Length: 191
Image (cartoon, rainbow, N blue to C red):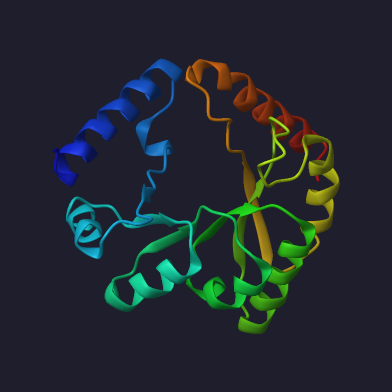
């Protein structure tokens, strides 16, 4: 079994290689350590290797881990967030990766306004149009962005999608290309 440090070294090498192929600089890539279900001790190991950004998919897990990890960390919500949980987690998050409805964005706005903070979000898009997944359908994204961008305490940082679970990951490239095209098209409209 590889240590956290060995795993991080391997991941960083893969990121470096992917950046070289894509003509990008590794510094442009944010590495988020997905710490869901992982013990705090393992997170501390990652922190010793320079990791300060962690992704969780359950509000209660973030809240519990924050009691033990008091260092300044960037917490990202990477799973579905229920509206009734926004109050519990909003003050603790650096970014919410899964805003999948106008109603959720409105709730984030309400809680952010109460705390006088700005919440950073990503809009979740169901690019593969899977019934089992959350997110706006691609044809709904522009209208959703127009609405959410009027919320003074919510800042949209981009789009995200969760690709289908397939045996050949190459099959999913089309979804990421289409997501990028959607973002470029929307950016071209200066929304």
